[in-house]
Image (tube, rainbow, N blue to C red; front, side, top):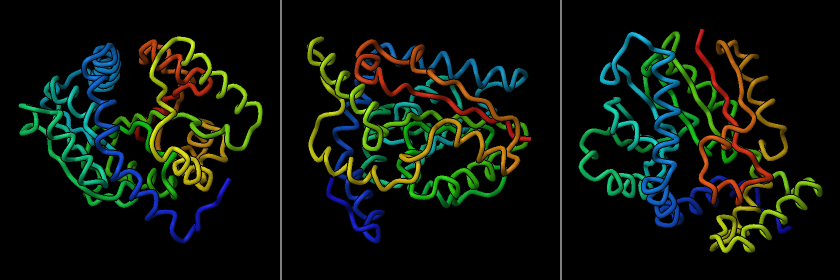
Amino acid sequence: MMQINKDNLESINKEYWLNRAQGYSDVNKEELEGIQHRTWKEYLCDQISTNFPDRTPSDINILDVGAGPGFISIILAEEGYNVTAFDFAQSMIEEAKKNAGVLADKINFMQGDAMNLPFEDESFDVVFSRNLTWNLPHPDKAYDHWIRVLKPNGLMMVFDANWYTYLIDENKRKEYMKDRENVKLSSLEDYNIGANFDTMEQIAFDMPLTHQLRPAWDVEYLNSIHAGSVSSVEDIGSILYSEKEKINYCSTPMFLVKTVKG
């Protein structure tokens, strides 16, 4: 695999995602129209209400870090939560605003760096992130900030996967290729094939979490900084994914790292 100059890694990564806004937005629209609209909303609202049993959604402030084209921010805003959709890419934010429609005025859209949040300490009741940490050059710094802006007894939910382990593990590559075969046999769209996908693989190879076993790494790091009560669910995708996603990502199950701040 051709390597990317690490001095240029961050800028190449940013350019890649700036150009992915439209395609990623199409995926979010599919989620909003599919079973994921219900599965994600039900699960997240249950987690939040369990953590805050005596509070109403309008009294709960949520930070959606790496909000992308807005899927999570939108479904939580529908339920009346106060949501800040935060993403580094203005192109993603613009897509999120369009996808939100009449809810756009109820969501606070902000551009910024997930590894250097501009918010005051203890600003949010809930910090949420999905499919972001794997793509950060300094995930430890990101976690430090996310915990910093979380209120005491606040809830942090990080959803991610070992997305590119197949780049460094031959057995995982065989499983990954089997997924590609099963997607084709099922006549489904393959989410892992697209424009500049080879560039993403090159970027991913140099990202630190590609070379870590997760969610064990996340749990260990959060415990090391005394973030609070930390737990994980190894295959949360089994209850959140559509059947199409389950076939696409069979060898790469999505996990949840959940922290209640001490």
